[in-house]
Amino acid sequence: MPKKLDLTDNLEKYIIDHSEKLSNVQKEIIQHNISLGEQQRLQISISQAQFLQTLIKVSNVKKILEIGSFTGFSALSMAMALPVDGTLISLDKNPELSNKAKYFYDKAKEKRIKQIIKPALESLKELKDTKNLFDLVFIDADKENYLNYYESCMDLIDKKGLIVIDNVLWHGEVADDANNDKFTNIIRDFNNHVKKDKRIIKNIIPIGDGLTICIKK
Ligand SMILES: C[S@@+](CC[C@H](N)C(=O)[O-])C[C@H]1O[C@@H](n2cnc3c(N)ncnc32)[C@H](O)[C@@H]1O
Image (cartoon, rainbow, N blue to C red):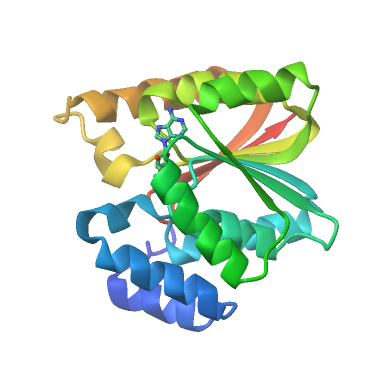
C-alpha cells in the first residue's frame, strides 16, 4: 500500500500556490467571506474551485447549473472556465447573498452567470418544464434537500452529463460510526443512495469537504 498523504494546511497552501492563480475578484470574494466569520465555511475551498475549473475544461462543459451560490465564489470560478458562449444558471433563495454575488460578477465583468432567486426546488421544476438541459450540475445548498436536488437534476442532464455534489465527507464524520447527528446521517443516506444508483458512474474525491463526481451513463 503506498504511503498515505496527510493533507495539512501547509500542504494545501503549497498546492494552491502551485496551481492556477486566483483572479483579483476571486481573492476579493474570499476576503469578503472571511470577514463574515463562521459563514466563511459555506464557501467551497480554493482547491475545489481549481478542480472544478479543470473538470469543466477537460469535459468541454458549456452549460452549468449551480444550486447554492452564497456570495458567488464557486459560480464565478466555474464561469471563468467556460468557453465564451458558455452559460451558468445559479440558484439561491437568499436575496442579500445573491445581490452580493451579483456585485462580484459585475466587478469581474462576468456576463455568463444568470441568477434565479427563489427556493431551488421551484426553479428546478421550472427548468425541467421548459426542457432545459445542462452539461454539469453542481449541488451545494441545504443538505436536507440533497436527495431531491439529485433526483431533479437527473432529468436536467443528458448521457455523459455530470452531477457534482459538495460536502459528501461531512468533515470526515460520515465514516465515524460513533457519530449519529442529524446532518451526518442525512449525508450518509445521500451517499448510500448514490452508491446504489446504477444510472451513473461515481467517484468521491477527497478535496475540501469531499466532492462526488457522477457521470450519467
Ligand atoms: C454552502 S452555501 C453555497 C456556497 C457556494 N457554492 C460557494 O462555494 O460559495 C449554500 C447556499 O444555499 C442557499 N440555500 C439554502 N437553502 C436553499 C434553498 N432551499 N433553495 C435555494 N438556495 C438555498 C443558501 O442561501 C446558501 O447561499
